[in-house]
Image (cartoon, rainbow, N blue to C red; front, side, top):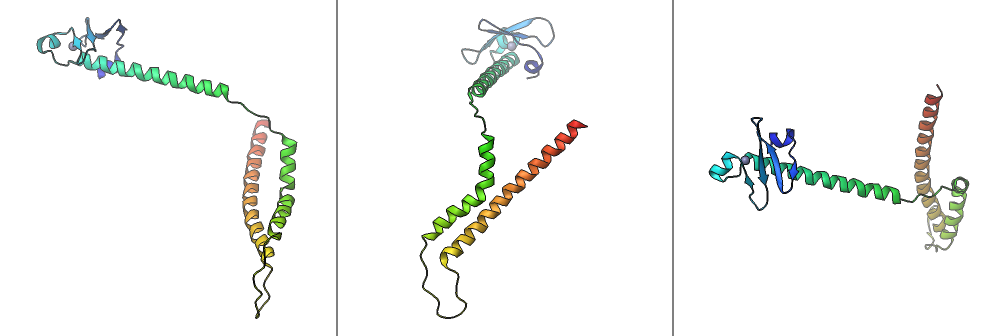
Length: 169
Ligand SMILES: [Zn+2]
């Protein structure tokens, strides 16, 4: 593995050219058909899978991975180019945010208006009409979400302010 990781192993024709670890000469490795062949003495002597075959396999795997990475990055580039963006209509966006609360109450009121009444209690404090109770509960929940959004906006605003302050100094 050390061989494959540190040495350059070129691929010529069908042959991987693996340098000798002693530094003199090269061995030619063919990986297919399995289990491969090598021109070194070890391989010729025992016809076993020598270190040069392992090194060539590793180099082949690395080449395949590099090819795949390149293909993926090309694909990502293509997606990035294709992605369409739309301009934000800021005046409408701002108007929607300003009117959101009023509009929400109008819609909620209309929705609750259709809610029927429960039978009246005969004793104790008279209960609130069901449609009003529903309106209040829903509005309260909506306000919580709404204020969370306000908080996010406020934080974003503060971040922008500080970055403007940094860039002007
Ligand atoms: Zn060998």
